[in-house]
Image (cartoon, rainbow, N blue to C red):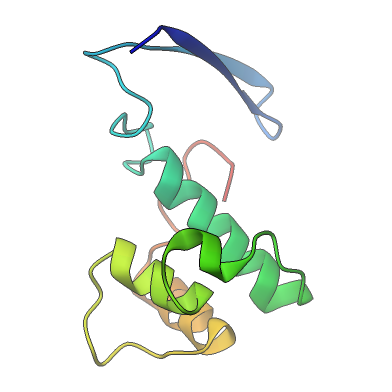
Length: 107
């Protein structure tokens, strides 16, 4: 696996973080200071955008699930009693505090 770089810019706090990906520090498993991986952060941002504005950030089939809400549920291991639509799932996750862990200002 080659080495790659990612520049992560936080607009609210105007800070830049350089993450070097290699075998020890892989971007797929790296956790930001909020405690979320890159995939989890992007899924939460996309869910919020879809719930609040109705804009799809990706085709749900790209995630490997039949719907975008199921991709979020599967990634966070939320279980069967979780709401299945994007708007209700967003409200549920917001109520449960998933959007409170945003010390990086990205969510």
